[in-house]
Image 1 (tube, rainbow, N blue to C red):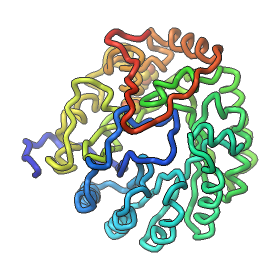
Image 2: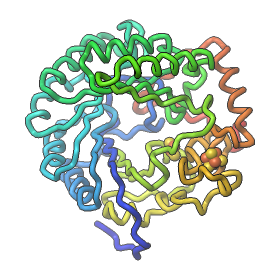
Image 3: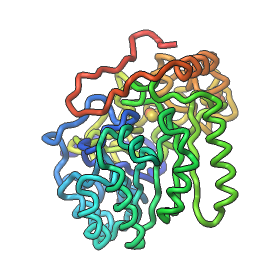
Image 4: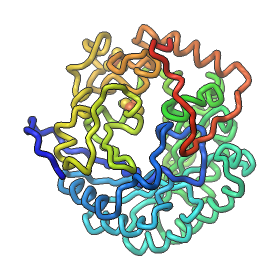
Length: 381
Ligand code: SF4
Ligand code: FES
């Protein structure tokens, strides 16, 4: 284990670790950002390895651990892993669907020191929500789960991923968050990687719907000041400037997959020719500092024009590498979501065109599916 690599100059420590404990999940959301090729249970890291990874994360300076997946409570050792976070002083956030075994493990998770719960909600109307999540009877389980989280006194964040199938429910998501006693609501427009990229035409809302959703959130923020915090992630394809994806490549976050591959962002595996290192072969510190996947787009040296000479280059770090690859065919290009990209007008036109057509059926997320990425050799735009 732990091959030794010549050290580069130290870089500031990551703030967060996304621990994708498993890709198993009772839901099948068509917007899932997991890769199309999902890790099987037989490949998952064992408990001891996760506990070592968490110890290394704490030593490296990580503050927050997001226990995620898939559905993290599908792992039998979720309580032991959460307890390790607590013992190491790592703030633990359970990112859960609230279905399957989530509810029965909640009290034990609370008892060992879980700090926070982020619950996904696919819709407000139960029938619509269950169509999107691909699981019957999920909504009552989620409601019961949320009620129990709040009754335990754990802070609750609701996460709603917005797309054309539920954008008419934005007001409803806000009312639901208030009713459930959530402290925070994420109104996060879909980001088109992984399964969401495959389903883009089925998910893309039109500009008028997007603008309306933003107005609703802005008004609610005023109205609910001091009661509910609402985070808004606007859809990249309609944005003026891109977001600093993952807080900037190799700057804030590490993402460990179920089999121990360490990524700078959750979708990085789609970028060809990046060399990823595994926690079974290198320490987290070595990976953070030296792994080729982390150094590839860290900082600004790799940038092309217009990013290279743009005064926002250390604000958004050129946007999203995965989106640049998906749309421009080059992960080092300016993210075409940026209005300064020469491809931006085409992105807008593409979004408008897809949103105007009748939505195709969802391609649901499935382990072992034969769905392949529609990304071609040539740039899609
Ligand atoms: Fe950001 Fe690059 Fe666009 Fe400038 S040109 S705003 S750095 S993505
Ligand atoms: Fe990979 Fe944005 S999702 S850089």
